[in-house]
Length: 246
Image (spheres, one colour):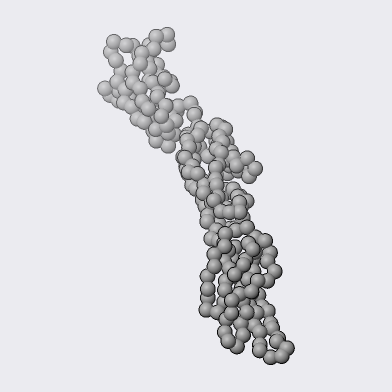
């Protein structure tokens, strides 16, 4: 059989059964070729598909023939694209933030990849051209924990997604101090509200000139007060107390 690197082969069938294939017109094609035999048909198989060309001839006078062609195209499996992992982030209110997305697809021919936000906090945007996520957390989003999910879709419809968490810390505000009642032993309580993680120093003075540190505490957020019990010191004629950031 001669295939000339083409797409077709002709098989002649008569009353005596299958004869050797006879060449017909070929169309040039480059991909690799393998030959398999299925009963009475000679088949040329390419990675793009399979084509059968069958000619049936009778033994009358004159001899009459009929030609039929069948092509089966097998499409490759469309694998989902790959999106690089995304790390969790912790941000402050008003802090500009950006993250570049990176993805790939191994299917051939190359497909168009589309990035999109599936789940995101208010104000977060995705630039489809630059593949960059951008966000500036607002005061109303503090404190807060926000899930973010990004999808990557190829032109064949296969989808991959990645998720991460964006945490917004509590906005920095001046500490709030509430003074409790004075006890019989001269002690009293202070209730301190401050941003989480901030160190607050409690100081006392008798003349508003020289301040003495009494205690220090770490803020637990404005929803969780820190309560201190203070005892007046006999050696210090305390008249004033203050709380300040360290």
